[in-house]
Picture 1 (cartoon, rainbow, N blue to C red):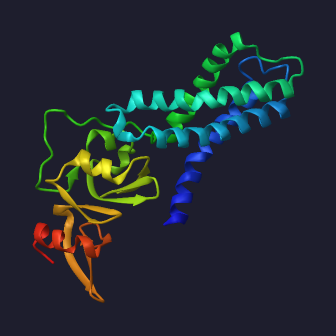
Picture 2 (picture 1 turned 30 degrees about the vertical axis):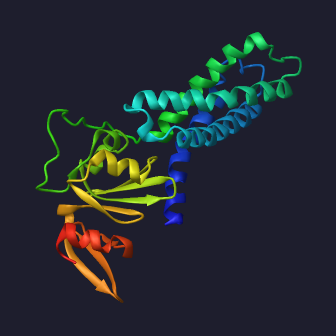
Picture 3 (picture 1 turned 180 degrees about the horizontal axis):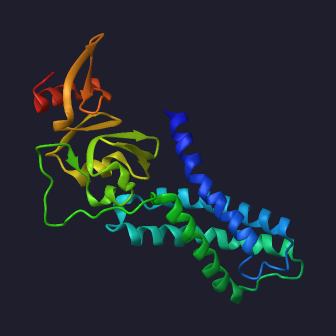
Length: 253
């Protein structure tokens, strides 16, 4: 699980590094021509890597459920992560350009510059690629199939995964959303996702798993433990503390 988690983080880091290389060649914000190409590349790649880490931390401090709409939350994460990065930039730039120290009155303009870069990093980091279709606000989730993804999850998933949840799997501070068409990671807590979906369409069966009620196809018992086989072939463990609740809700165990 940790290897898969690391692989997903790496896939997200690649476009961020690409952004650093692009900025290094473009040399925006008066970094070209005062800095040579090699220095610009090192500076911008280093800044976006640090910005990547700052965005991750800010994303944990501003959880997905704290702000209803994803757009304002992304902006808040960008601004929060830009605050420490502003002082990092104010410290590094004079080392690369002696005599170009920032005065206190120049810090707001520097912050605006850093925030613009952080906003690009945050959208690459926390938003999945692809045009995400909208869920009609007036149409409720239907219980005759896998659960329909709520807006808070849908806005973070690529459109190729569709709109029907089969299961949710907690991976550290991330959430892997399994659909009939595949899976992807989003920066969200399992508890927040379960609250967004509601109690009618599924149930938590393990401290790290939630499944859609109508996605369950079979119960498999091994060594006095139970597992659920879902309609997409995924096998989900049932935690001992959840067995009674699952038995009563699914009427299968």
